[in-house]
Amino acid sequence: MKDSLKHLFDFIENGVSPFHAVAWARKVLEEAGFEELRLKDNWKIEKGGRYFAVPFGTTLYAFTVGAGQGVMGGVRMAGAHTDTPVLKLKPHPEILRHGYLQLNTEVYGGPILNTWFDRPLSLAGRVAVRGRDGVEARLADLKRPCLYLPNLAVHMNRGINENGKPIQNQKELLPILAMTDLKEPGDAFVEMLAGEIGADPRDILDWDLCVYNPEKPKTVGWRDEFVASPRLDDLDSCAALIHGLISGGGRDGLNMVCLFDNEEVGSRSKQGADSEMPRLVLSKIFRAFGMDRTEALSHAADGLMISVDVAHAWHPNYPEVQDITNYPVLGGGFVFKSAANQSYAWDALALAEAEEICISNHIPFQRFAKHSDTKGGGTIGSIISSHLPMRTVDMGIGLLAMHSACEMQSAEDQESLESFARVFFD
Ligand SMILES: [Zn+2]
Image (cartoon, rainbow, N blue to C red; front, top):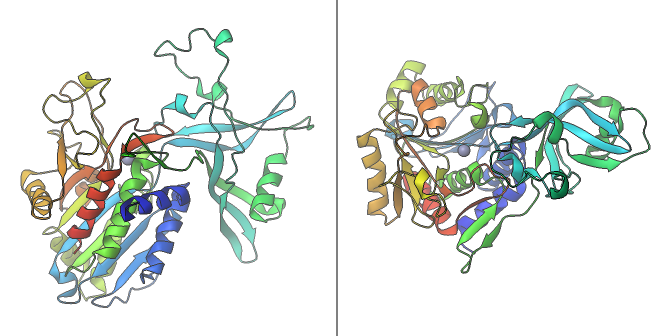
C-alpha cells in the first residue's frame, strides 16, 4: 500500500469526530518534531522551526518557517475541514418505549440520510466533565457498534423504493441503543457514557457527541483502484495536507495548514473558516518576527492559498448532472474547481500558478465546473479569502456518493493530492 493511502486510512480510522481528527493530526505532527504553541501565549518562533496550535479542540494550524528569510520568504497556506455530515446527540437523549432504549439526535450538515439506516453505528466526540480544577474535556469514542437505525420492513412501507420519499428526522432518526427494564427515562445513558470514559456519572456536565460509521476504510474495485470509506469528505484532504507539510515544509517563507471545523454548517463559528482565527494566527506568527498585523496581512496578499475539499466526480449513471466539458473522473488526478459566481475561490493567474506546479512535477489534475443550470456547492475557499486578502484556489479529490455514510474515491487521486501538497510546501 502506498504511503498516501496508509496516511488516509490512519486519519479516517482515528478521526471519528472532529475532536479525534485533530487529536490524530496532533499526534502525527508531534512525532514529526512539530512543537505545540498555545493561543494565549506570545509565540517565540525560530527560523527553520516547525509548530502547531489547536484552538478549541476541533481546529488545527500547523506551520513551518523557512531557515533563510523566515516568514519574509513568501506565504503559502492550505485549508481543509475536520467535520463531516452526521447525526449529533441531543441533550437529555433517552427515549424509552416498551423496553427499547433509543437516543434522540439532530442532523448536522447535509448527510444522505438513507445511508445511515441498517448499518452498525457508534458514538464519539468530547465530554465536559467536572474536574478538580474546573471543567475538563475528555475525548470519548465508544468504538463498539452500539447503535442501530433499522429501516421499516418493505412489507409495511411499500413506497420505500420510490424516489423522493422524505425522511422525518424527529420520528425516524432515533437509533436503538439497548433493551432495558427501566420504566422512566433517567440517567442510563449518562451512566453508560461515564463507564466508557472512566468518570463519575455525577461529574458529566455536557457533551458534543456524534453518531458515526465505525466501518474501516477499504480498497474496492477489480484492481483495488477505489477507496470506500466514511469521512472521505474532508479527511482525505486533511491527511494529504498534514503529511505533505511534514514531508515537504522546507520551502523558505511561511508554510501553513489550517484545518477548520463547521464547514458543513456554513463555517460561521469561532472555529470555522468564517472567523477571525486565521488572521489572529497569522498576526501572532508575524509578531514573533517584529511585524504588526497590517504588515502580516499585506505580506500574505502576495502569497497563495489552496482551499482543499472534495469535488463531484462524474457519475456514470447520472451524466446529465455534470457540466458538458469539465467533468472529473475517478483516477484522473485531483481537481481544480472554479465557478463564475466565486462559490469556488479562483482567479486565472492563481489557478495557472497551481497548474504549473502540477505540470512541472508530473502530477495529474483535472478541472471541475458546475452544470450551468444547477446552484452547485461551495466550501471554505471563498469564505477565507473574503477575510484574508490572498489569492486562493479551490481544489480537492473527486468523490462519488458525497455525504453518504460511506463515500467513494480513487486511491491514485489521494497520491496526486499528497504529492501536490508536498511540492507546494517544498
Ligand atoms: Zn467538504
